[in-house]
Amino acid sequence: MIDKVRKILGLPSRKTGNKIVLSVEKLERRVALLENGQLEEYSVERSTSRNIVGSVYKGKVKNIEMGLKAMFVDIGFEKNAFLHFWDAIPAALDSGIEEIDRPSKKQGKRITAKDIPRIYPVGSEVIVQVTKGPIGTKGPRVTTNLSFAGRYLVLMPFSDRSGISRKIEEPKERDRLRKILHQLDIPEGIGVIIRTVGEGQRARCFVRDLRFLLDQWAKVEQQIRESPAPCRVFEEPDLVERTVRDFLTEEIDDVVCDDRAATDRMSEMVGQISRRARNQIHFYDGATPIFETYGVQKQIDDAFHRQVWLKCGGYIVIDETEALVAIDVNTGRNKGGRDVEKTILQTNLEAADEIARQLRLRNIGGLIIGDFIDMKSRKDQQMVYNLMKERLKRDKARTHVLPISSLGLIEMTRQRAQESLSDTIYQNCPYCGGRGVVKTSMTTSVELHRTLNTVMRKYQDKIHEIRVILNPDVLKRLKEEDEELLVELERRYAGRLVFRGDPTYHQEKFTLTDATTGAELKA
Image (cartoon, rainbow, N blue to C red; front, side, top):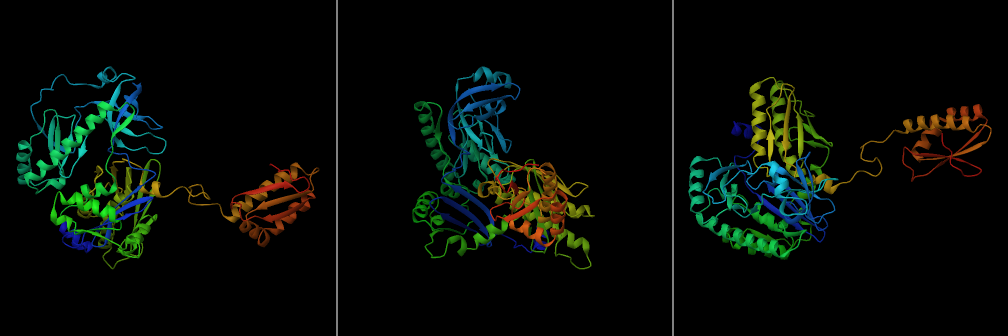
């Protein structure tokens, strides 16, 4: 069915021309993943706001909230970190792996949430890892279930179980990897996960990766012993290193970077893994900014519009609210021919493909509702749903999507580890205050007339001349369309109105003052 969808969307049978483009500047580092020239992944890291997700801290328990079943831990930030009781149980496992039990001397009585306050009393030290960065007014969320990602493996020092990523689905490959996993010399009480990128790799790759991760953990243990709380004992690698670790796979044809030092660092890191991959890394020294040369900047600018156009002529509208993200699908210019159902299906398929892409690009998280165009055929509905699931498989954030409802809605959740990219790049408009709209000149004129009527009645026998300061656009309307109403007010209350336009005034703002004393007048 997916092949049929690819044909409808006009997509190539396989990914070709995949490229990673890195822009390294003093204040900001950016990474873009292009597939056939189209932007598919985009990450930003700024020098003033380094991503702390994945970093490990030695903290102190500040207080315990039994009602919330959580602890608040001081890890050196302005806001204490939130540690749920269930995240404080070392035996907890990520549901995204297939467990393989190995004998452990540490197995004993199962720890429950009721035991946590006794194990971690107020004032005690605890080693935690950030799973979700500070968002808005909330502090970071942390866990005691530490994990360290390598190239092919994830090391879990406080777990005694190992597994294989469920995204590796081929039974024969899983059996092969399971054998390799059992042959690895994993220390007692430590678990590992074979990452998705480990599919098809030889045993020596895992042996080398395990050795690197164990050395890394040994350094962290030393930091834990020697450093007083609160402090950071492990920092998640920067964007350049994470790019090599997470993105540079066999599907990538080229890596281009505009910084010589970063290019050399990536070449050195990759050279330890693959000589062929090292030859794929290139330094860009062109006069034109690298993101403009490869057409990335325009795609970024287009991607963050509220309305995103589809190839077929339809479009989607994305609205982020506090509680959820609403995405509306419309046919737009795609009126199609006589076959209306085919037009609707094509628009919905392109929308599903673009929605999955936009979620990754914008790093949108939480509850997401997609309002698709109604489809009568259950087969068409299933096709759109299957495409959405297929596209979400590549998402590094955990997602859960439900089938299309009878109302034509797709409901889904996406893991929110940090603020969305739009929150990082944009701020609320200082003019409209984040509403996205302002009152019309007519509305402001109506409110001004209402206020003038109240003020002139209130000060009828005391003030004979009132000065009105307001936005020039509103003043223009008053002169051209509402002048007779103002003259009537002056006649009714035997007063005089003097107007002055001030371009610094908000379109919704106006000030009334006594022309003689300059005192401000309130209704």
